[in-house]
Image (cartoon, rainbow, N blue to C red):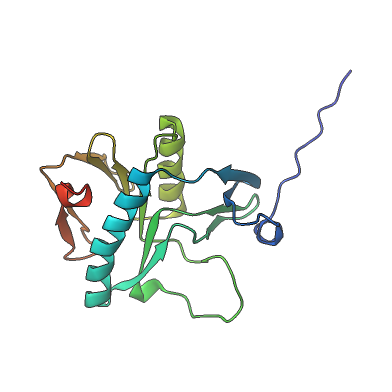
Length: 186
């Protein structure tokens, strides 16, 4: 008779203390996941959308934007720390600043995931489901390969926007709108 040893699950605090030497990583239900660097199209499109969205959010003083390396503590026991490509938290929901480093304790209002060529469809779907279950109000999945953006909201059917459409922030980033083609540099 053989016994299976249970996996040792990490807490967010143990994850933060790991000597990962700059490796991109996330903690998913207590398990460490390392991520390879992204390819050129991913970086370019993420930056372009960050600039477009960022200029609007800053000009309107709507809240804060966070870059891909920022960890969000979205679940405890087992702990999950995810790092979306872009995240936005509305001004009214921002937590008080602290001097000690920490994962962002507030669930984002908007999360943007730019799909890399190495991403598997099931993994992308699982990310979207995890973000929505955590309380994110709007998720944009940007697909460089076919120049589309999937728009996901809790308890609503998703929508697919083509390069001829306009992406908007709905009630999450009020007044924001940009042509999808601009995001892809078309």
